[in-house]
Image (cartoon, rainbow, N blue to C red; front, side, top):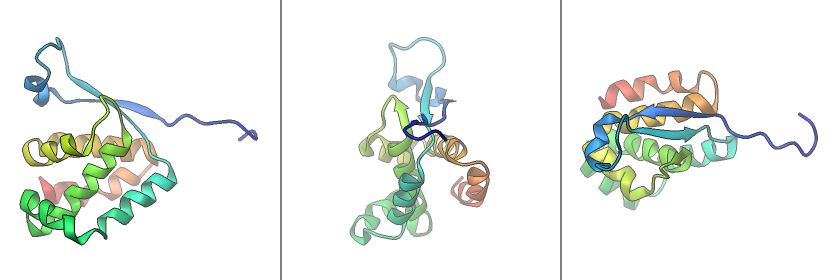
Length: 130
């Protein structure tokens, strides 16, 4: 890499037509654009999975005791890696509660864009949540 050169993160689209009812003015496929995370962002997201015990009760209510931390992890990933539309924590929680397959597809795409092989390393978590 040339000194001072800034590398743009890789981006990709994820079709989420399950959310069409949330975007009634939009015609055609509903596609969210996401980006890969930097090493620092990935580290921060992973650290969140193991911390903030007080918030865990919310996640357990949404995903159960076993899946709560994993859902929280995936929500943090999409909050960090969403481009268009930008996903905030409230919308991420709604996806976790009502559109879990969409949450997981978005998260997996972000991990795929972040580092080759990273998405497949999270495959067991995705299978367990489905």
